[in-house]
Amino acid sequence: MNAVRAVVVSEFGVEPTVVERPDPVPAPDGVVVDVEATGLCASDRFAWRGYDDGVRLPFVPGHELVGRVVAVGDSVERARVGDRVVTPFVCGCGRCPTCLAGQAQVCPHQEQPGFTHDGSFAGLVALHHADANLVVVGDDLDAGGASLLGCRVATAFRAVVDRGGVRAGDRVLVLGAGGVGLAAVLIARALGAEAVVADPAPAARARALELGASAAVDPADLPDALDGGADVAVEAAGRAESLALGVRSLRRQGTLVQVGLLSADPVVGIPEMIARELTVRGSHGMAASDYPRLLDLVGTGELDPARLVTRRIGLDEAPAVLAAPPVPGEIVVVEPGR
Image 1 (cartoon, rainbow, N blue to C red):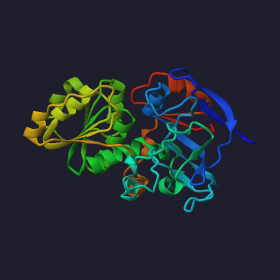
Image 2 (tube, rainbow, N blue to C red; image 1 turned 45 degrees about the vertical axis):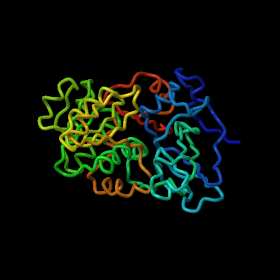
Image 3 (cartoon, one colour; image 1 turned 120 degrees about the vertical axis):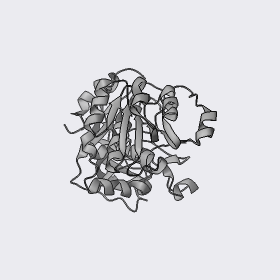
Image 4 (spheres, rainbow, N blue to C red; image 1 turned 180 degrees about the horizontal axis):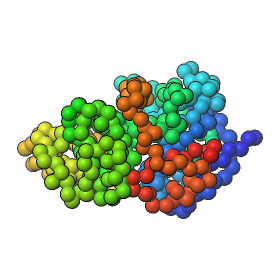
């Protein structure tokens, strides 16, 4: 039996180790992918700490990836060995009414690599429901940038475009300049919208400005930077006070899209929402069926996800980086072959 190297979390909150494990085999409806690159996401740290009830020890983290299909299950019809693919981190079942309606990102039977089963911090990863979830990408797309299409870029795209309805000329307030927030800046600018960022970390604000934000301020200074308010706010920090600030910062009939995973129940002024006809919407990833619109934006050069990558590391470095506090504005990609 062949063996593959993988980062394995054996105890929540303890630095993982790189070990050899048997090569994964595809489920009847699944594939095995040779991983080129995988993003290190805030949600990976969330799982590593044990904050996700669906994660069981031991497990391999990693859920945003790009790679080549090397094995397919017996019932797979669309995927082929050699395909270069990404996948949304929410893998819908492809059969339920929700998936058939094109809303696989909220599939009640969803699976997520790195959470419900072993993920992509490895040389090989098994993915489920392949025909419903794999998205083929071109060989010319940078591996690091392509991996981010699986989570933060797709999540930001749906939050900004589909849930926020952002159009050219709109002002978008991005609360939190982490992976999703910085991707939201790129997408807003690609659409011809203005992006204003609020984040307490100077390094994160500097990255937002590099990526095209018109202003990047400490949340305490936001009122002075938003004269007239925002058409759309994207809360990507996962803080209850940030959500409340976003609601207060909206123009009349504005929309706040909640993406960040909240650690506390928010308090939102309902009378204010009624009086100004505000909307608050959740947003959870993006279905594979919606990827063509995102890839069109990438294909024209208007959106380059590789611009988000600030650090590329090998598999042996991944455990220490996963266990370390995140660096503001830094977006790390793990490349197992390095």
